Amino acid sequence: MFAVLKTGGKQYKVQAGDVLRVEKLDAVAGDKIQFNDILMVGTTVGAPLVAGAAVQAEVIDQIKGEKTIHYVKRRRKHSSQRTKGHRQQLTLVRVTEVLEKGADKSGVKAAVGTAAARVAAHEAPGAAKAEEAPAKPKRAKKAAAEA
Image (tube, rainbow, N blue to C red; front, side, top):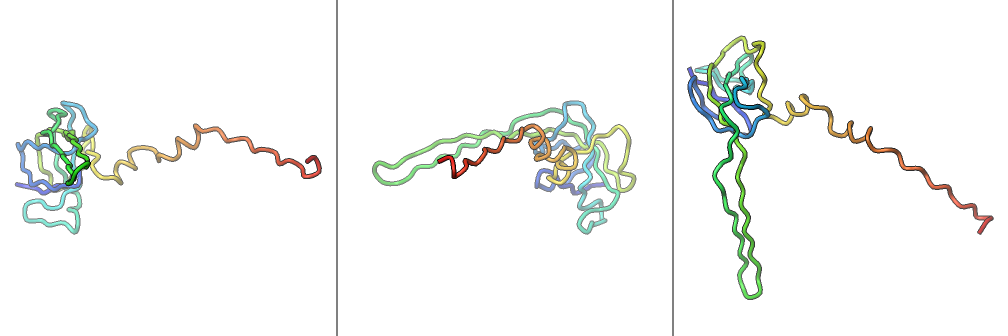
């Protein structure tokens, strides 16, 4: 049985035993993770997600993708040029199981791939900064009579 899952802004068609290179996930090699954003399982199409479906996988390694070169050259005399390189950080995972129902299994870490899930997993970013920064003392206004 196959499933179509969504993670890192991309969609993947997977089945048990497949090895995927997905956007970096917060996991180490050997961790078991679970993808809960399932768009399709077999012939069941979600609207937009299939309720109760999940794909379980095991993290093989954290890797980097191939290097992409971004070269910019502007025409004419006295123009500029710039070269930048980039290597995307990826997570290598092996799909172990496709579940149509019963997605909640203990001991399995949910893969945090969406922005809403990242916000739910961590504290609100503004709350910690507000507590750390001390309030600035207010300056006293000079009286007009003294001047």
